[in-house]
Image 1: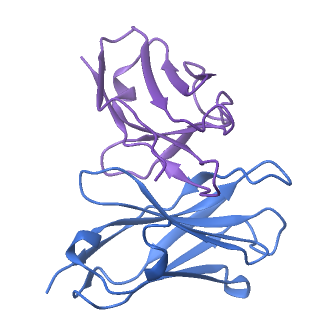
Image 2: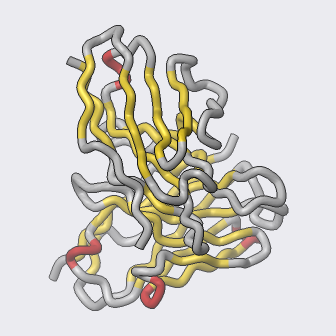
Length: 124
Length: 108
């Protein structure tokens, strides 16, 4: 059974850097084809993809946020960390991590399952 | 930037068929995926690769693709299907993940 759980601060101040950790079980990020993604959702709004890291350490970022995001993995700890710099009140959202699925040897990406999400509020 | 377009809302009576569309220029070449999100919960995958249904998802959920539009169909809608539904795909220029704006399904 695959599970993921997000952790990190619930409140950050404007201009600060947000660091979120996704701790997972049921799979290994050293296995070919595996990946973990981050997706966020402002209150009452749509899902927005942020970043994706693959088993081979390939990393992809949303073009609109690329300059502010860094995604890393710690395979030994079964964790993926997302950092977002220069936080702003518009970044207030629930942040989800999710297990990436695909057919072998393809660039397809879908997410199943997702973590429960963590609400991050940006306010002074 | 690439966009996937969904209707903001769809309403159906119990037992009827709900159809939720998602349009995007790259959909003829990229698979689409659908997620169901109930209030206060994380999204759940209900359709992958346009029309495949994950284990545990009821048979009343199905997906189809035609040109630049993909459709999520829920046959015999039940009250428990009331939720937000999001499509997801990729664009043709290397952006691996794009989400649609979501559709709120209301069961009357």
